[in-house]
Length: 146
Picture 1 (spheres, rainbow, N blue to C red):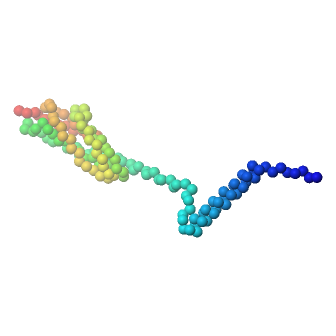
Picture 2 (cartoon, rainbow, N blue to C red; picture 1 turned 90 degrees about the vertical axis):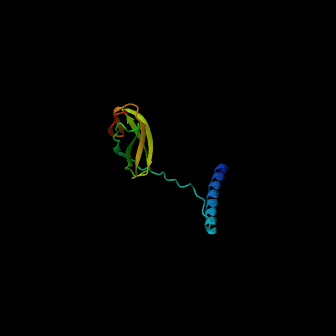
Picture 3 (cartoon, helix red, strand yellow; picture 1 turned 90 degrees about the horizontal axis):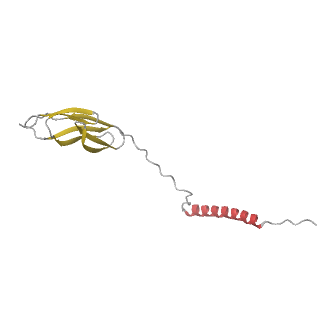
């Protein structure tokens, strides 16, 4: 008499489930394609991350007025800021008066754009003063009032 082989029902059940799952997936895909319905997506497509464009700023054309005794204490100092880069960016223009930052302005420019920036200050004491904006330095002389 031949020995009987034992049937492992767990292995048999797993093989059936794998086979059944594959058949169901094929049936769903065929049914969707035949009805004009798009097949379900397996995973969403990745969203591309925009590459930031470089910026580079140039400060030029520092304009300091010439004052005399009849000039008021209020003075406007002008400079031109240009974005040499391809992308939009913000430059912080700092006005230094005698080595002390007295005002700042944030200048947002598109790539390739430029803009004049104006600083309005009141001069407190007469004499010669050093004015600096970015890499540019000039002299402001105010003789004071008579």
